[in-house]
Length: 411
Image (cartoon, rainbow, N blue to C red):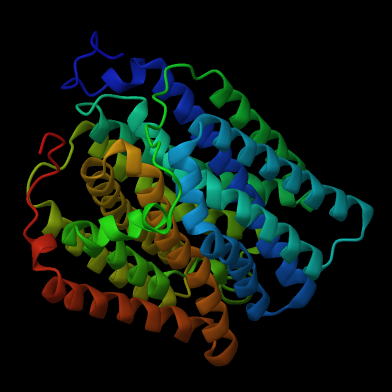
C-alpha cells in the first residue's frame, strides 16, 4: 500500500492518498465541531448568564460517551469503521442544521441546546474511537508515527480556523455558524466515502462480557499505556479552562465574540507549530520524561492564563499550553496505537476516548461548577496547580512510564 514511499522522508505521508483523504475529513469535522462550540458557548451564556450552564454543555456531551463506551468499542472492532464514522458525521451535520433552524426560527432555548448537544455527544462517542482505529489501517507501521503527528496537526489546524471562523460568523448571528458547521460535517463524510484501501477489523469472536471488557483489561495490563491515558485524564480534567473562555472573553478581557474565537484558537496555534515540528522531527528518546515535562508546562501555562488580565498575555499562555499539550497527545496516541493489536483497537480506543472525553467534557462541567461557586479565576488557578501536583504523583506511581525511552513500532 505504501511500498513506493520512503518512511524516512518527512513529506512521504502527504503523498499517501488514503491518509490525505482521512486528513481532510479530520480537518472538516474538527473545524465544524470548533465553530459549533464557539456558537453554543456564546449563545447559551447569552441566554443564561450562568457558568453552570457552560459546564452543563460539557456534561451533555460526556454522558452519552460514558454510557456508550463499551458498546462503541465492540462496534468499531466488528463492523466497517469507515461506514460508522461517516454515519456519525451525518448525524452531527443534522444536529448542526437543527441548531441553525432553532436560531433562525426563534425557538432556540437552553434546554433545546443541551438536548441537541447530547445527540452530538452520542455521535461523537462512536466517531472518536472509530477514527482513531481507522488510521493505523491506512498506513504501514513505519509511517504511523508521522501519520499520528500529521493527524494531530489536522486537529490543531481545525482548532485554529474553527473558533476564529465561528467567532467571525457569529457577528452575523448563530444561524450562519451552525449552518456552515453542518455543511462541513457532511463534507467530512464525503471525504471518507472516497476511501478504498482500508483494512477491515478481524474480530470474529462472539460477543461476551469478556470481549466487551477486553479493552479495559488490555489497558490495565500495560502500565505505560494506563499511566499515559490517566495522566491526560486528570491533568486536563483539572487544568482545562475551555468552558470558561466565554466568561474571560466577555467579563475579564472585554474581547467579545471575535475575541472568544481568538482565545479558543490560541492553544491550537501553539499546538499546530509543535505538531508540524514533531512531524518532521519525531520524538526518538526519553519520551516518557518528555511527556511529564510537557504536562507540567501545561499546568504552568494554565496558571498564567488564570491570573492574566492582558488579552495578549492570555493568548500567549494559551498558545504555550497548546504546544505542551500536543506533545503529550502524540506520545499517548503513539503508545496506545503501537501497543494495541488491530483486532482490539476499537475497544482500546473507546476506553481511550472515554478518558479524553472525561478530561474534556467532564472537565468543562467541573470548571463550570467551581466557577459558579468560587469564580472563574480561582477555578482555573486551582486547576493549573492541581495539574502540577498530578505530574509529581504520576511520576512516582508509574515509574515505567517515566523510563519509557522510545516509540518503537517494531517492538
